[in-house]
Amino acid sequence: MTDATLENARYAFVRRETLEQEAAPLTVAGPLAWIRNNLFSSPLNALLTLACLYVVVTSVPSLVQFYFIDAVWSGTNRDACLADKVGRPVGACWAYIADRFQYFIYGSYPIQQRWRVNIVFAMFALGVVWLLWERAPLKKVGAFFFFVLLPIGAYVLLLGGDNAESFLRFLILLTFGLALLYLILSFVPSLARFWVGPALLAVEKAAPPWQRFHRPKRLILLAMVVFGLIAMLANSAGLPRVDTGLWGGMMVTFLIAAVGIVFSLPLGVILALGRRSKLPAIQLLSVIFIEFVRGVPLITVLFMANTMLPLFVPQEYSPDRLLRPLIGVALFAAAYMAEVIRGGLQAIPKGQYEGAMSLGLGYWQMMRLIILPQALRIVIPGIVNTFIGLFKDTTLVTIVGIFDFLRTIEATLVDPTWATPTTRATGYAFAAIFYFLCCWGMSRYSIAVEKRLAAGQKR
Image (cartoon, rainbow, N blue to C red; front, side):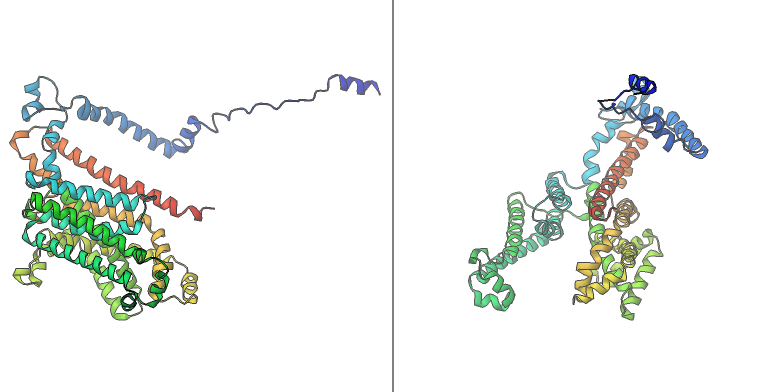
């Protein structure tokens, strides 16, 4: 071994332990890196960031001072929100909101009958959670409850009167008749063959009689429970008629939005398919309807529904004053929904249609099983955007004399009991919070659904 080798071996070192991982530089990861990359990535972004920061610094403290620090949270009349009465600067008058909160929810609905509205709210919340919760069981039964039982129950409970109770008795008899027919078909196969067909009967024949045709059993049982509970409430508490002119507040806003959303989507699908139809008559009618409705503002549609719709029917069959804007809003939203869905249909590749036809599927089977699920998934943002716009457009029904939530706030602003300089700003701030929370909730849920449905599309 040479002297040079011995000299190198003396200073040789072999590391036996790995070094600990060092933190990334501050310019690459961390808060400073995020600020640099997102807020000050260019001169223009830096200028916009500074402008927004200036607006926040100059406006937010005054808003916090007005709506929280100097706000009045309790009181019985306007004296609690007047600076010369309380001897200090007065901000938002939240005591006015607390005092009129019941009116904001129910409008002029009779106080003794507001339990009926609460039941409808509870049914609506149950139906929404049942449909929107991903892990909820019996989704088809939930859809039957939301789209069939809830509208019928809401009509009977909210309107009341002899006509509603007669309609309820008819529904109860119809439900019991269906239940009896179900039992007969379950225990008498020879009779069931003429109603459900030999194919379905052969599938169900192996099960005991009380387990056959299990799907209708759930729907009939749910209908019997719902109608029975409503009938018990009607007999014990009574359901006097409450004219729709007394309805108002959040109840009317949710009613108009729910009717518009529920009916605009299926109508939009039909109109979109009609516009793409190869039958000239159907295509022409769909195009005329869509372009006509989209070419006029919603206020015009509401005026036409309120003044012209009664002209097409006899006087004794004239639609209710609340039913007219409901029809107008649903048709108006359906025209916009049709164009959103048509965009999704155009985005489907031609191979999907050819593959569906190669399987022997008919037109409606192809649309229901192959095309529409993909098209609706693509246009989820557009659908929810239309729903959000519809929810905000419900405020326009005040033009035709309907007391929605915003109209109830405007009606209380002229009440001398709470006439103060800060009442108007407080009322409109409360309305803004209400609409923001509802629209933000719809937006966040749509984002979650979009991510869940697009999980298999990520690369």
